[in-house]
Image (tube, rainbow, N blue to C red; front, side):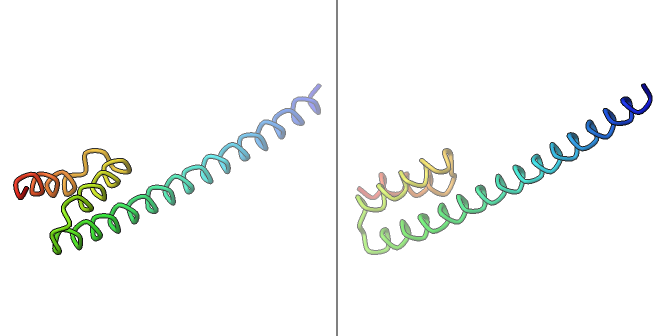
Length: 88
């Protein structure tokens, strides 16, 4: 009886360790995904600013729409869109 109990405790501990490892890996993957998305948004914002600097308002508006698809509520994209509407 005691041997079965010890075996079950070992199995439970191993299972918990696997779960912790999987959780850690999932959190790391989420962090990578967030960083990649942030990098994409920053790149798109730079592109939109370049488009605005040469008065390509339609292109900048489309680029800013991409930003908002990736980061809804992005303050900088919303401000730039309002500037486009004022400039048109």
